[in-house]
Length: 232
Image (cartoon, rainbow, N blue to C red):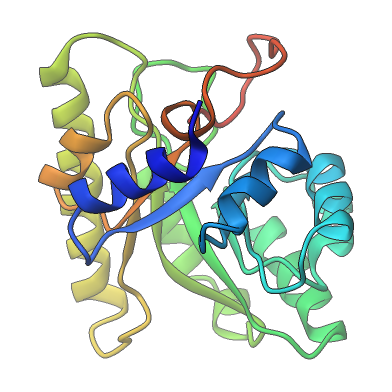
């Protein structure tokens, strides 16, 4: 598996306006360094413990994205260094991120994760829950947690029309939120959708950020239990 070559092929294939996040979960530090030495520096992890260990062992200029479900009691461990948390699924979590980021005098970019898939096993907010967060008095007080867009995971299926419908829904809802809540906020611009199996459809439907793992690093080195988790 030629990791640098895989990254180059992806970067040639996707528009320049789309950001590539290499999902390195379960992959060894050596694989990440192989990508890093080729000039790539944006990686995503879905477990806090693994993210912390890799951050300690790898260069400081790596841009780390947390893409998996995040428990509130673990935010403090990644707040000093994480660049983006893509999986915000509650106001409570957002408030903790704001608090912990403030302790380090940092602003952490966040994406609200919407539940767009047919599968109930995926995390994410409903439309009503998103609206409740954005209209909450507590949201208006946030200073160190910054919402910059949305994230969603499509249904794991071979039916392209289902995937396309879900991605279109997320992109359309992003436009609505932009118009209703962030009309002058230039930082609210990200739609993170699309993984190894469906990123081409996601880009066609308006994705600005794709999360790709197996197409870069190959199959996972260990199996994951079929619980709620981010995919790549």
